[in-house]
Amino acid sequence: MRSFPNGNKGLLAFAALVACAGTASAQSAVTLYGVVDLGLEQTRLSPGTSTTRLTSGIDSGSRWGLKGTEDLGGGLSASFQIESGFDASTGAGGGAGGGLMFNRQSWVGLNGGFGSVKLGRQYTPYFSAQGAIDPFGLGFVGDASGMIAVFRHYGVRMNNTINYSTPSFGGFSGEVAYGLGEVAGSHSTGSQFGLQGTYEGGPLTAVAAYHKQGQVAAGADAGDNRSALVGAAYDFKVVKLHGAFADNRDTSAGGATTGRSRDLMLGVSAPVGAATLMASYMQHQDRLASNADSRFWGIGASYPISKRTNFYSSYSRITNDAGGALGSGAAGVNVSWLNFGIRHKF
Image (cartoon, rainbow, N blue to C red; front, top):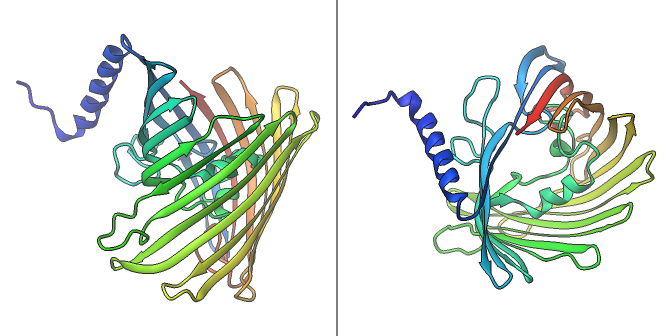
């Protein structure tokens, strides 16, 4: 048998999965899908230097995945999704989850008239609620920028998660999720709990969400971080208005308040011919520390050249007070992003 160098192991695994997908498709619906997104981006720090680079995943993360369903009869079906992010500028594996093979999603579920139950690595309900009302769709206003930088997102995804999603009733739907902390001797340490409710009716989309995350330090309980969010978007056809408000509270293991902040977002999006224009303004207000607030604004445009391919561009900026550190992680440093890119879905 021919031996392959280590660098080809990922390619062999991918080929095997595609072969499996083709075999499985005879018994159930299995889809191979993905996104390749690359853009030229300039990041400027003030004070500091500027960097120009080719960046993967500005509009939405570059990825490939497999998903499928099987009809079990009696109104029941089984489903699964495995999804891996990668850096399209280098071909390296990457994205959330570091070196995980399927760092974006990895779950299996059961669906029916009761809704759906999914087990595995999944998006948090809190993050899904943000995506429903952000004019930029949580994308393409810059690396570490936009709503994903100003509002908390709790890692975007949860490991070891049990998720229940309701069916839609008159435009109302919801989901609740619990991520096991798997810390010996404690059910709460390292665990996560989230829920969200959504209403979609006519021009209105409204969301409410809550997330609680148990912190861990050296294997021990380090307190909780909690956030509550409300938001809405209303489509007037010529323009769509977006807004959100969040309250964040942190406590120590002993219950003492260690952090308190609020976040606000106002945004608009509008069709202009085939293109879509977007803009938003956000504030992060630290309620405990003085001179630690941050402000964000961004504008962008997306232009489809086919059903699966679009060009995009945006400019955005985060301004930090002397004690604020959003966008760069360094207190008092302001950051701006300018990008031009192309995204293709398959």
